Structures are given as structure tokens and as C-alpha cells.
Image (cartoon, rainbow, N blue to C red; front, top):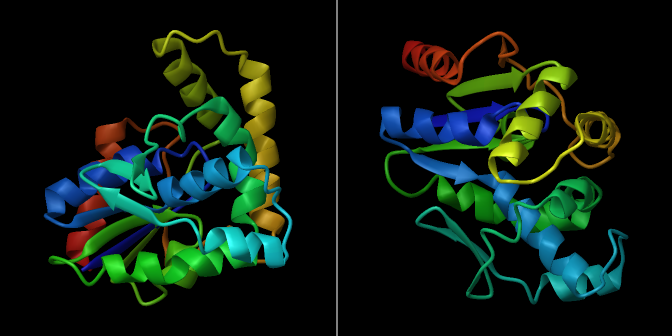
Length: 215
């Protein structure tokens, strides 16, 4: 079984997808972590989100792997480094690059070959990566609710976030993701629209599991 969960930034896709995968006995593919890892690595060596030969050259040097819930780039664990506000702000411009998306496409598809199947989350999973997925979900929530979730997450981490700045960042990322030329964020054909604005995390998980088993 392949379950594709797409949606905008801050919709809770990663957390929900992990729990759905656990309940269904499937592997979890955190595609967002893959893009974050590449964005972090390219930014760190001074490669801007601009298409060209230099980008291709550097991408070939980066080996991204997911293992045991951790993210590795060329063997180094970057799980913590890719979950910072800085990476939040730079990942969309990099993800919009067709060269970068092509670099990760085969890696994502290979994950479905292991075990009984996969629950994959992202922004083009049901439309590009797994268009023939058994179950497609478009998980969303209002920009205000998504910003508030990010705000609370950062408070728990001991940070001093500014809600208005987070909301502005969420809206800008929505704009970039929805208007990019390469695999823009869209509701995949045949996907079930699930608005989690007024739902608890467990309610969302239960609903997706119900839909997946029904299919």
C-alpha cells in the first residue's frame, strides 16, 4: 500500500504521517527532511537556489539517506541542523528547483519497494512522486492555525518566536510552493481533502487510517 499525504507547510504532515504509518504497519518517508537536508547542505557551502551547472555538480556530491528516523548527508547526521528557523526560510526556494527535485525523485520512489509499502508526505507526492498511490490525502489548515502550531513548537523549544513573523513566513512559503514551475503544490487528482484546523492530531490520524483502509 502507498499512502500519499500532501499539503502546505505547517499542516502537521510529518507527525501525522509517522503515526499513520505505525498504525498501518508501513514505512514512513519524510520527503520534507530530504529537501531540508539538501537545502541546508547547499546553503552551507554557499550554493544559492539558482539553476545551473554548478548546482548539478554539487548535487552529485550529496548523498542523502534516511535511517532510523535520522537524516544523513554524506554519512553525517544533520537531523537537528535541518529543523531550524533558518532552514524553514530557505527550503522553499531550493525545493522549487527542478534539478533538485529530479535528484530526489528516484530516491523517493525506491522507498516504496521496501517492506509492505509506505506512507509518504510532501507537496507533490500524490501528483508527481506516486501518482498511482492507493490512497491520496491533501491535509491542510488555515495559515493562522499553521502559524500558531509553529509558534507553540518553538516556545516549547525555549525559543522566543514572534507569531506575526511566523505567519508571514507561512504565507510566503505557500505562495512559493503554489506558484513554482516544478511540481507546484496542488491537491492531487482523486485526493481526499482534510482540513485539520479544528481537529486534534489523533482525530486526523484516525480519519486518514479509516480512509486508507476503506480504499
